[in-house]
Amino acid sequence: MSKPDRWNALMELMAAHGRVDVEEAAVALDVSTATIRRDLDELAEQQMLVRTRGGAIAHGVSYELPLRYKSSRHASEKQRIAAAAADLVGEGAVVGLNGGTTTTEVARALAVRAGGLEAGGTSPALTVVTNALNIAAELAVRPQIKIVTTGGVARPQSFELVGPLTTGVLDEVVLDVAVLGVDGMDPQLGIMAHQEDEASVSRRFAERAHRVVVVADSSKLGRRAFARICGLDRVDTLVTDARMSGEMADRLTEAGVRVTAV
Image 1 (cartoon, rainbow, N blue to C red):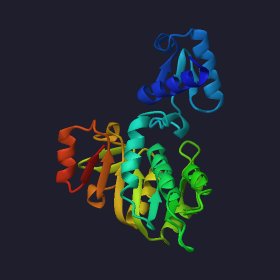
Image 2: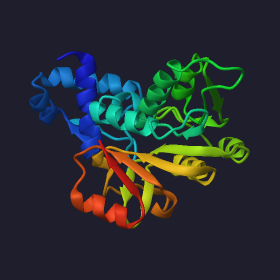
Image 3: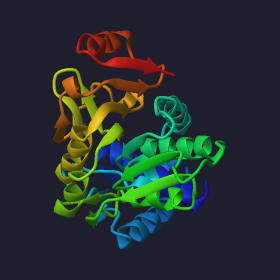
Image 4: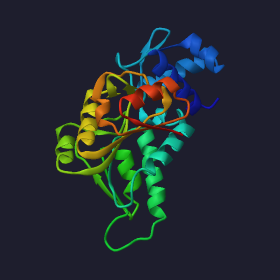
């Protein structure tokens, strides 16, 4: 197993359990304990975790896996979800995208579609408003997409801009649709994020949009996170994968959410 694969596996274990034990990780990854210790030392140097005697622990109680390590999780499902969500965005629309791996895939799907359109006059095929630095960087080179970024303070784990500068910009725009990635979705509590500052920005995206589309793989459904974004009464559509349970689909539909499983 290569070092990047080991690191990804170790971060997956950290995300699942909040801690990593050297002996257990060595067995799970089929490598020596010395290799695991070196990997954990290097990850600690990058401030990805905190080393302890016999292993490592997460930085905080509510641990969030950094974006670059989350990108490989449920990758095929996220790409299908992204393609279906992109189909819900009309040509010439103003779309808001918050940060995350699934919304990054949505941005890529929108870029591919916009690239196939004929350029006409001075109007862009699409306008994207985002607080995600990685999404802005990918779309900035697309001449048929007008990219608008918010100000704010960058969060290193998710590449999202947050804070008063971010919400200040969002207060000045009107969106046709907001496509939101979330960390949890509950039929009673609504949609949620791990971090309160990211939840605040996503809430503002929802408030400024005519329609709200949530993109989330089925592992997020029924899960709760620390900070509430908004209730399901503000969500128009959920695009998820086909592994969602029928019971969850029924409960969300009863709450007024249109469910699309791909």
